[in-house]
Each structure stands twice: as structure tokens, then as C-alpha cells.
Image 1 (cartoon, helix red, strand yellow):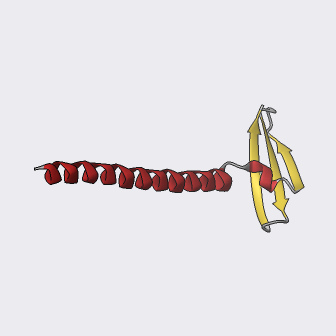
Image 2 (cartoon, rainbow, N blue to C red):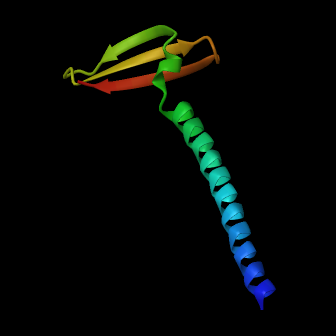
Image 3 (tube, helix red, strand yellow):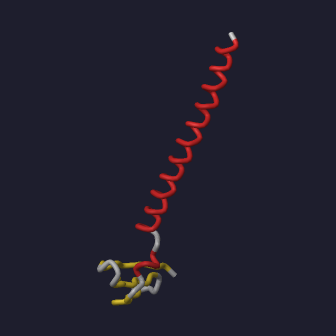
Amino acid sequence: MYSNIHYKVEMKKTYKKILTVVLIWILLFAGIIGYGIYWLFFDWGRFKDELINQSTSPNGTYTINAYLSKEVLQFHMQCWGN
């Protein structure tokens, strides 16, 4: 009887440890993926190497800046509203 209760307690502790480690790995992986998506799609600072052209809409509401990034050799346009 004692060994059965002890076994269940040990299994519960082991299950909690495994669950904690798995959750930490999932959160770490999600954080890395989240930062990668942010860097790829929303970090505009990495494109501002050389301004090629700037154009304003006819009513002056929007300004479009075209940058050439020497770092990744990629053409990228950016549009800002006033």
C-alpha cells in the first residue's frame, strides 16, 4: 500500500517536471518565431540605408519613400500617412 502511494506521488512530481520543461521549450520557440516575424515584417529600421526617391500624393496626405538596402540588396518601399 505504501509503495503504491509513493509511486503515485513520484509520478505526479515527474509529470510536473516534464510539463514545466515542455512549456518552457514551447515558450522559447514561440518567442524566437515571434521575434523573427517582427524582424522580417515590421522592423523598418533595417531598410533605411539609401533613399532612392520620395513622392507625395497629390493632396499631400501620404508620402512614399523608396529605399535601397545595401545590406540585403533588396528594394523596399515605405508609405507614411500624415
